[in-house]
Amino acid sequence: MERLKEKLKQIDGRGYKAYKTIEGEYKFPDFTLLIDHVQGDPFASPSRLRVRLSQQRAGFPAELFENESRRTALEDYLVRSFADAIRRYVRGGRGTGRSGLVAIAPCGQEILKRSAVVVGEDYIEARFVVGLPARGRTILGTQASEILFQELPVVVRRSLFYGNLDLHSCHRQVELAEDQDFIRSSLKEKGLVAFLANGSLLPRRSGIDDRPMPKPPAVPLLSPQSLEVSFLTPNSGTIKGMGIPQGVTLIVGGGYHGKSTLLRALERGVYNHIPGDGREWVITNPHAVKIRAEDGRSIERVNISPFINNLPGGKDTTAFCTQDASGSTSQAANIMEALEMGAELLLVDEDTSATNFMIRDQRMQQLVCKEKEPITPFIDKIKSLHHNLGVSTVLVLGGSGDYFDVADLVIMMDCYLPQDVTAEAGAIARRYPSRRRPEGGPDFGELTHRIPLPESFNPRRGSREVKIQTKGLHTILFGTTSIDLSCVEQVVDPGQTRAVGDAVLYMARRYVDSRRSLRQGIEELLKDIGQKGLDILAPFGTVLGDYSMPRKYEIAAAINRMRTLKVRAGPQGERSDGKV
Image (cartoon, rainbow, N blue to C red; front, side, top):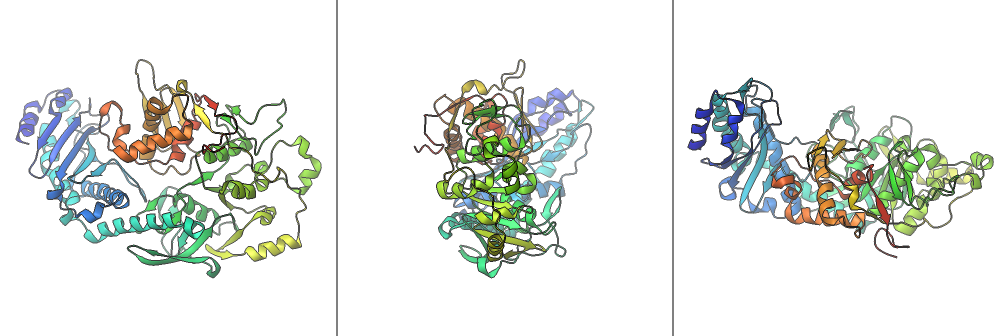
């Protein structure tokens, strides 16, 4: 530490590049400071730093990180604690550009595996960034010393020492996450795809504020008696609420009564949530995928024949390709790509679907005969999807009662409260038969796995061998290829986007070999992350603190939206799960 102080005195007032001399490792009384990378000027990306302290000094009891669920929740909690300590104890605003900035990866409402804090058996490490202070491009060594020797030690003590934390809130987050994972792992044995506890607050404050809407006006959820189930959790006792069973579930109701709000809660229910979010007990099958139409996306040799066949000109739909998909073909491809990766639950909102993909009523069937219509609508595949493949669907619906004929459960949202109206919907269906003819046959159709080819993945941009960047939540620049994830709605954290970009390169270099399927390659990648952590994704052996764990479905979604993607089909008759 004294050596670092002396260096900062020596370079005070010199040109900014002299900051490079402070890279290295320094012993402080309570922790070790590692300065991994120093920015080139005050306007560049901030410098990357780490602090590491022993578990003996930090004092965390082993029970807080004794399994993966608890460890992830504790790491997430410490990231938030570190960020809060920065807000409290770092002055900021010291000079030009990013001078004086101290920051750690931001967190939303979800509890995610993050690289910003790593809790090991023997140590805790926090990764963060600092804008080293300068006036113009002249080093402000005294102000850098204030950050590193006065403010940073306080931040570390207040956020990474067990005895200085709010112990109730720390334990509560760890225990809550363990309970959420317990319920999620218990859904299948109860025949459910989702669970929403009584008292949950589903509405959000606004489209740009994901925190819960206060009550009132928000209405706490209350399960209909016919759908109420309970779970005895390890830490929170018995939790009661609404269970959504496997099969076909419709969510109906008038406009602004909470249909889409319920579906959005379910799509986020694949992740754990922090205490106070309102959706802590909204738990969804982890293999749920939100499906929508996506005009203009590229599609590379996807077997969409269960939904689309007999195109004019004889275009092959068992290996369908386009650089500019329509609403119906994109929605068909999105479903087939999700099934290829092993999805067990599809979440669909009529508002973001292609109308001609969802339904063809009796009158349209009379006017346009089936021989002239290549699309088999979703209504005619939704039951076989469940019967043949075991894949359930939750569908928000406001405009077509024809789906009553294929529903196993109908939930009506009335002023944000769910009601079980399955019997009423069935009676209406019998009283007013739709008289439309089922199309598409009794079986769902073939699933074909695809094998990505190595030439698909070129991360070069100009003279740089590897150039992968992200812009916000929805854009990855992979070399010269731009990947648009704006319609991939279960990406919830910018750290996931960054991880996806680097994960694609990691997978391409190790598991894209013209033999492994896309699913096999991604699952090998995720196995490596599970064994070695998110750090394996960082290029050039660097240590980065801005990754959050993505799911395999979002990694696959990014690859499938690469306009450079080239694939070949697997062996004839082989399905995406490897079964024949």
